[in-house]
Image 1 (tube, rainbow over the protein chains, first blue to last red):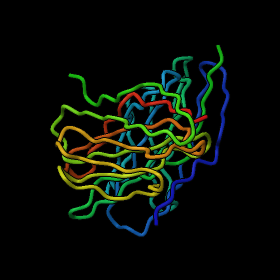
Image 2 (image 1 turned 45 degrees about the vertical axis):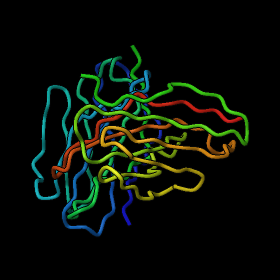
Image 3 (image 1 turned 135 degrees about the vertical axis):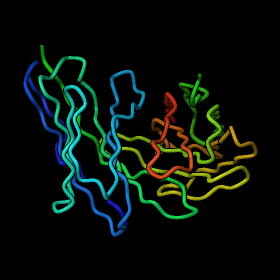
Image 4 (image 1 turned 180 degrees about the vertical axis):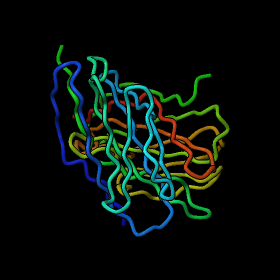
Length: 117
Length: 113
């Protein structure tokens, strides 16, 4: 069974502060992918990043960066110099890769980020 | 490019009524999914399909049925709605590629009274 834990239910920061969203996962599979999705107030789910279980390189995309550590089963997401537009619910998700299976996602419960002006 | 389209966007049902949610994708994806989103619980998989004519149960399938008669469409049915099925429903699709991301529809907010 797979499990994704986002222990931070709500985070509130002031604009321009840095913020890190935590994600811890459990899986018995050796081949898997991790994702982050953003859900703004409008409700749609926006894909942000994927990382496979064999690639522990950190990634930076503009103000966003991700830290994947297999040793601690964590895939944390940092927003640098946060902006009001970053206010959203952020979901971490996990899928395993198995021949013939679909790519079902196991989601964490989400972290509501509020960036105050 | 429309991506994944869900119909309707909002619906209020009375307990015991039935309805069908329609999902259509135009990306020629093999895999399609229905999730429900409830406060504090993230998204949970209801049913999914690995191709036309196939369906399978997810984590929370009770009270729902699905059909995939055409590759581009995935229908979610509620035969006898219950208040516990009040939720936001998301349809998604993905290709067969390893690690491919899922593309989500805009969601359907369903209230059962």
